[in-house]
Length: 469
Ligand code: HEM
View 1 (cartoon, rainbow, N blue to C red):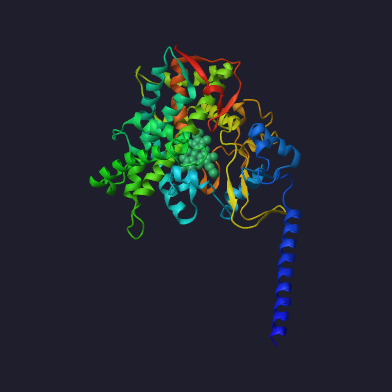
View 2 (spheres, rainbow, N blue to C red):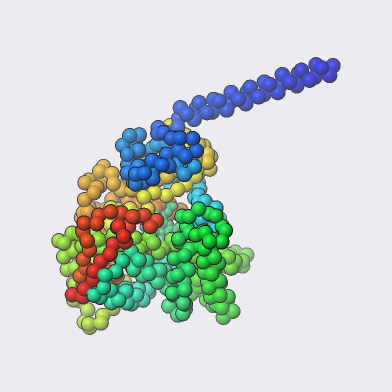
């Protein structure tokens, strides 16, 4: 009797095991059949060495030439599907965005602050995003023109007769603009201390996450604690003054004033993490694009003349010598706006972004397995001759007609797209106005290299010599 039961159980288990095995095998065969084309390289390291032995851009471009617009690879320990078509980018970022979540290593989340909105999805992300977007709409930033202008002029005046590192200078400028928007113009902060702490924080961002004394990561985490203390002090002081009850024109005012349907406020950590995150997202991005803009303008003398003429005509409409720019002036800078668009396209400082499939997803007959990373390749789309003829030519006139949908994505698309795009464009317009009307600059044209800091910038951050006109 017992023997019978054991035999039956054994046979049952074996049958179940066999079924499971066949199902798994079937799924593996099905996956293999349906996975996008591409190669996965060596076990574990995949194709990481190939990625870094070329530049990431030529690695992705070569892959696309070989396998088409959707292909698989294995980099940095993760199986990935790369997508390089406008439709696929829309699928991942917009129409089926709920099937793909943002993905960042835990060490980076700890460094920026785990409550920062870009690490999240769902209700928490939606709540924070609404607050950020409302603060950075054109109406939320139009009052900043004059303050941004003062910062631009102070930066430019300090360049007179000097050789400066453009990228480092642009970092300081966009950092100050970010701080201005977040805290408002009345808050008196120790900018050198804040700037130093941020520089130390960013040095550890791409380092090995080993948190023992002496490592870059450890120094970064210390700088983060210091930043958190400075920002925390401002939050506490404003709370004591009861400023949270009147929505302020600055981002911190918006955070302090927020109450959900049940009257709940944001926690101290949620505010600190989102402030640190916002500065992180805004500084190097804007600074890298401004650096390219200064390079591209100088490299095309005829274009520089036309942009200068446009900016001179804005100046000529002003009656006094120490005039002030207005929000309306920005609307008349049409050519300069197209130059900024073309810079965003050619430089594509964010070559791609990351998502992770939350379930097996089918796209055009291919399977993107659950847990795989998905990378929309913005640079490949921006440099496709199909959408931008002669893609390597710097030609702002191509933006006289709007680009086709989903072919121009410098600020991403969908629910995680950039809420700071209007502020970034405003900073650039104001800066270019004063640069072209008052200064001339030069750099070593023979240095054509690119460095990753972590976004792409011209070699050595583009050292320039600046003279007043
Ligand atoms: C030229 C400068 C900038 C560029 C090229 C840029 C680019 C981008 C891109 C491509 C994304 C989407 C990333 C993704 O989908 O994974 C993004 C997101 C974001 N950007 Fe920007 N950005 C710039 C400036 C700024 C500024 C000035 C701010 C300040 C508010 C900012 C704040 C953010 C934030 C908070 C997110 C995350 C949004 C979310 O997850 O909902 N960025 N940016």
